[in-house]
Image (cartoon, rainbow, N blue to C red; front, side, top):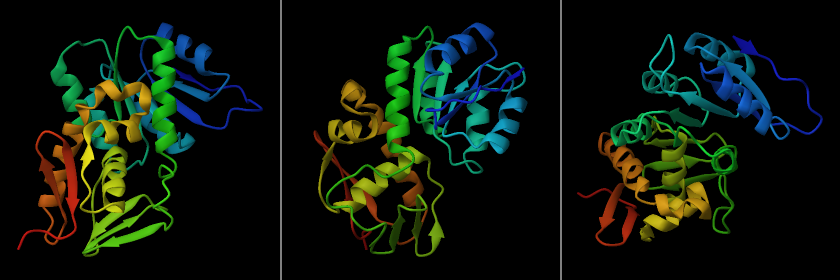
Length: 242
């Protein structure tokens, strides 16, 4: 089932919801339809087709679909679509949350969810996805730090010309840390930048994204290194160790 939204005079952002429960789809469309254009798909195949046709600004993805595993679907779309992802799940397993973040999701919401909280999370993800968070020290769209180049206009980072395969959240973290090399960022500061003040309690999720980003940098020669400052947070060293 594919549900096409009615045109809206004010809604400009497009959200694709891939959810096989029609009741949840209806609730999301009713609650969010005034502010966003909502597209509904009930299978992974329908969702992938709409990703190509609609080019949504955000994907809300159930991890249990009739024709696909949402976690696998999330991992497969990452190299092909630069779209932020919020995972929905009725599972209470912490492992699913951690794995979802490792596979590239920007947030994870458990069912049943509070619609106001979900709306706040959507707003936070969309706020950081289209443009780099405005900071006084980030005037240039392209920044070079050693062999690292961060292109904020293209939302792309490379090391010595080699493009890094980063999720939107990983790019956001790397871009922020590269703007202030050598400066230590606390978990709460990174979380506030990524998810807003509402989600400060989720600052420990930063560890998952940092670990994944660090692994990707370690695989590339000449890449800068993310160092842990124990008891406080992380910093990006301009030069890798000799």
